[in-house]
Image (tube, rainbow, N blue to C red; front, side):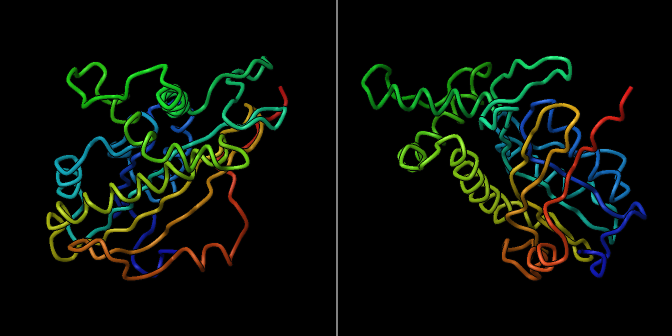
Length: 245
């Protein structure tokens, strides 16, 4: 999908990402760059996958797109799953069965919001210190959807879905303000979804929620690529299992 609109591996496509800082997401980033012939990704993401690059970062990125070329923005949160099928945790070492939180910043924010509701913590205020600014904003975004998450059968499964919706809304606002930086002849596509991190040595997956060519001036969808993608193939593994040593 996307080939008919000029998205290929000829080097005419800049990949930009808004993914979490977690090292587990670099595999997906690298695979997509390789697929589209991009030497590297323009990174707009931060903790939990929010697009902290904002309007300035997006506008700057638009000026890096090759003349007459394309931009593919890949975004979304991630969630781990361990050997016991527990969501929100993943073993990071192939030789270890010990799991750690994934996505840690998102879970920390959700746990904080629960304590606020119990009266054990004060609500998070607007960020005032650069060394804590990203997590402060993550806490505010998660707090806004905390009731939705808590009402779910499995809050750890609902958490990335709620984060995805929040991040999509933010990116839509960014495009509406900075999309004019895309000059005539440049094409903008969004691939949004949830990365599912699994134990080392097993395939991990990307669940696409949006795949579309957008009108860069408005952020409105011009061509829906998600339906043909889902009809064409099942969930795609983004990491191959390691070969036996």
